[in-house]
View 1: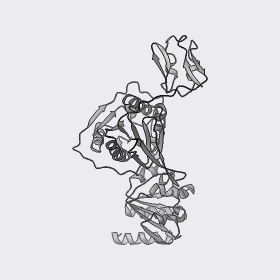
View 2: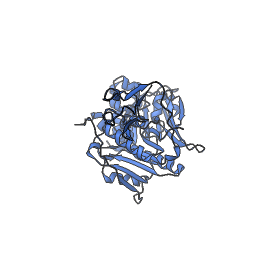
View 3: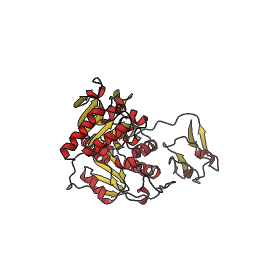
View 4: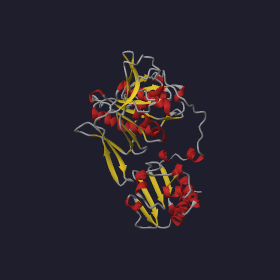
Length: 397
């Protein structure tokens, strides 16, 4: 089924345009026209005073895309409280590599932060920045983000668009992909350019992390992907680097909702796992909430943060904001200490790129030892107190 406009009946009153939430109705030669963005929501069928909009059988003609018209690599630079998030800097690193492989420009898109943050994106590798500094973007809200990013994509036609697989990216990026009628690969852990076709190779874990799937989008543009934080390495900033900052018009951008106030869970305010250099994580082997108090003491002495496996979170021993793994956070600290964690593949996906992994487990056959740089076979509740005691001695506490 598809929706069409009977031009003989249409009077060009434009009543239908406001009814469409997908911007799928436009005026051509003073007549309404249903474009390729139609999602078959059928809102328009009842509003036309002339009955000119109809639902008929058959599929819409295939949309032909000139792939050569799409050029450039874009990174959506997420900001929180006016500061660019680290995941954006990580994406600029991989984006720079992809842009160089395609012989094209790297563009950052920034909504809501000030011009200093836009300049910072230039220093981290962007050739230009589309910057929208408007109060509507001060707090994240799906609707205006979707509207403006979709508009920019339709106007400038980038070949590749990336953002972080964060709560913000996961919230609004799929809606952008739907609006511009292209595919989206979520939670990528690696990105490459196919040397033969020039397509983006989007690599992500599948089937619980048991295989790595390579996904391509050969017939549609842009190629869109969300990338897990802390799996890509940042580049090196160059404060002498120059680029172009383009102020983007926000005319017509609206939102039906408004963020009045935001609240942070206390554990989230103190637990920034994805930016921690040292993480002490606990699993079912720590035995309970008291075991995590012990890990918190160790982490505090090391200047690190406390993580957890899904098993510990499911038991209610520690809040979800501490969870590391496929259904939690992906981390890449300098040191990751796994205490009483068996090493299920779902957990390994979230931490195996850590620089140094130290595993403590009384089961010498635990899978965690397969990725550990240092393996300690023993009871966590005996070994961790000894580590705490020794560190206190060294620090003179």
